[in-house]
Amino acid sequence: DAKTTQPNSMESNEEEPVHLPCNHSTISGTDYIHWYRQLPSQGPEYVIHGLTSNVNNRMASLAIAEDRKSSTLILHRATLRDAAVYYCILSPLTSGTYKYIFGTGTRLKVLA
Amino acid sequence: DTEVTQTPKHLVMGMTNKKSLKCEQHMGHRAMYWYKQKAKKPPELMFVYSYEKLSINESVPSRFSPECPNSSLLNLHLHALQPEDSALYLCASRTWGGPGRQGTYNEQFFGPGTRLTVL
Image 1 (spheres, each protein chain N blue to C red):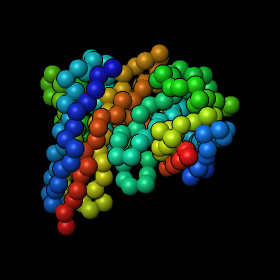
Image 2 (image 1 turned 45 degrees about the vertical axis):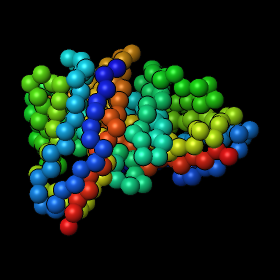
Image 3 (image 1 turned 60 degrees about the horizontal axis):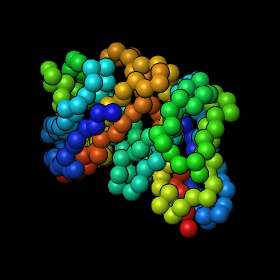
Image 4 (image 1 turned 90 degrees about the vertical axis):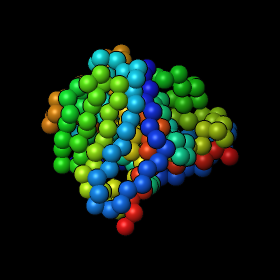
């Protein structure tokens, strides 16, 4: 299974954009790229996902490199509530089921 | 209702005990997952059930025994655990099938987890 690599931690000022990078150089052609985040004492929650094209939703944007070997999660205006661990995840199809392989995660600190 | 519930919230057990963790969802999801998360580490996949059948076992030791008695319920039976098995155990569920196109995402919903301590 392919793996992802993320920086351990990043800091951002409140109300500024944040770019969280993820490397997945061994990604397979059918692996989806997901981002989830985990707040303290909670289970992870969905942020965004994509396959080949850039994606936008109300929470964030996902920019996927043309060769799919890296991607970037973009939070357009960080708030204090966005402080969390952000996981970049690949989901290969295995035995007819999608499994989720979490990266090491980036701890985002948002400064007021 | 987009909630996945897990009981108990906390569990302390000795190495000779037998205990069970329970996970429940009423979203009609037919794929259910168990993850193990050690402190300051990412969740690691343990098992996946699809339509109440075990479809993925990530080489988990046999002292962990999953069970899916119906489409809403997922159990994890624990026996003869070791102290290194102490962790947060997370359950998740999702609609069976692919993640979907943009705007039609079959996301995983996670429960809050059971924090397990093995003495």
